[in-house]
Image (cartoon, rainbow over all chains, first blue to last red):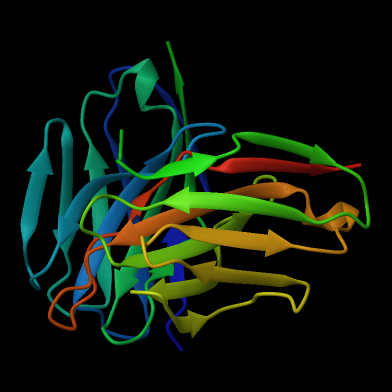
Length: 110
Length: 115
């Protein structure tokens, strides 16, 4: 089906390190989104991708829409303490509903 | 600030009770989605409304219901509450223009505690 496999489940990194996380699916999507959720808050949209192969940056964040349309990755460069949170990927193939990954919990040690 | 508002922010109630959560979408957004997030879990899709009509249903219990009003705000009604219903409830909205679903923007959530 349209299950999203997001990995890793959690990451513990040192401040200043780069981070990479990804989402894969056995189904294709025509939209990939990446969200960040702080504890007790709603997810905030970070990056939206609409074309296979698309590479988009938002500050220190870079995300790519996989060429097969079945995967996407998010990179965070030079991590800082405020990057702590849970990162969710989401994929959609309209008219089907958007699917969310289980999340990657990021901890940044100063 | 996503532009999506939710009230109340916190709600504490007893088992067996009924509560109503309210959501106002971003200006111009016609679609409203409701999600449930239990402790340390992912987002579970409950239901979607588009321009006042139910469009899609997820894992929503029969004790739960929702509606979207003419001014596009939405309410999620939870009845016969159980301890396991304690969770964060998020509302999201999107444009959904020309048949294409837009990016979903989330509200701050309502934290429901059932005691």
